[in-house]
Length: 367
Image 1 (tube, rainbow, N blue to C red):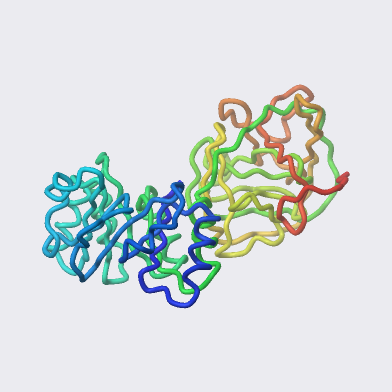
Image 2 (image 1 turned 90 degrees about the vertical axis):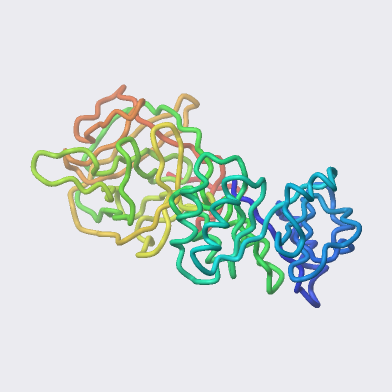
């Protein structure tokens, strides 16, 4: 989970509502320039004091953490000795090579580093993250909006430990929190037992081409019903008649569901360039990847029927071809045309029904 800090130092009329939303959404920290703005916050929220451009207050309470500008306030280590009841972190504005080196040094040695990159390029952040590899401190990057936060969360795959956002309106705390968790939670996969395969005639199937290379035991979850999906393998493994395309999953018929960010489902037919889909490996570890394109073409189709240990029936309709594959236990690669009754495949059983892709607790039957 990425850290979300909400900066209320320059919030005007809607401050009370924004803070209330932040607390409700369980943001990790609220940042203020005046200690009085931190007094009413509950203990579930870290109280961060950041008197940027001004003097350090005589009393730091009720702050849990104080972010300082060393040239103005003193070194964090020295201040920590004077105020043992409060944590201290360093603010660095990166504008040139020297300040970039300061940021790298802080990321390696300080418990908290709050960084502001003046230029829009993310190369300096990549350098700081590389320099801080293995360090125990946390890097918080100041961002302009939620869209930039999503980018910062993914830089060098690891991303910044967190971001600080100054909200412009009520609702942005919720959006930021959603962006922080859309890095995707791990899923509990189950072993499904194939009960049979059958040819079902011609139809349209979708190949999902992403902007990411899949790993050997990774694919996307696809199913005819929202209550059960099978893990479809990417074209990462060699094939005798065509080159590998490790960015592609020959996923299934266009009506099928797949999982995307935030636990939402999408039909394969509605995935578009720039959209998001969930990549999942054989251990259930997941990540959000970007869709590059979707190829929908008419092909002969094959229906795979399977059942879970709990009795849930799962169906997947795919292209009827040997080179289309699904994953079995341990990441075993299985050609769909060679599946037989009793073969074990990996799947996922969402517990909620769906309405326009969102989970909802309501009566619904899918056949």
